[in-house]
Length: 95
Image (tube, rainbow, N blue to C red; front, side, top):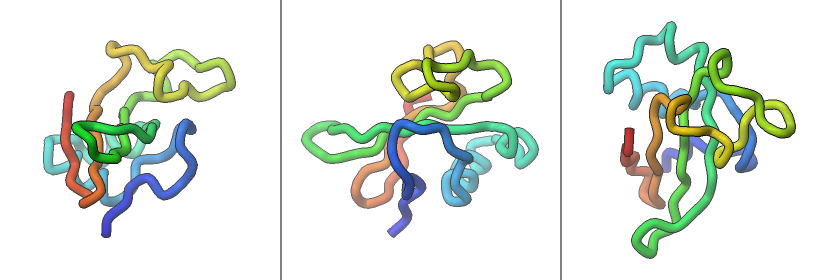
């Protein structure tokens, strides 16, 4: 099963290969995706356990309290893509 969020939550990370492919299919170029980072946060949506993600440009987003911004510190103007992944590895986009 595909899990693009294998590491700890609440820390910025490079976009996983699988999510890069999903975003590439939505029109993101490989060069653009190479420079982007993402955050993730475990949560619940409609009674299902999910992992929320936000993709952002680290050169434009302000730093968080401890360096890289945490998921909840990213304001909408800095989020390029966001959504969640459910337990069946289906990606749902909100932006």
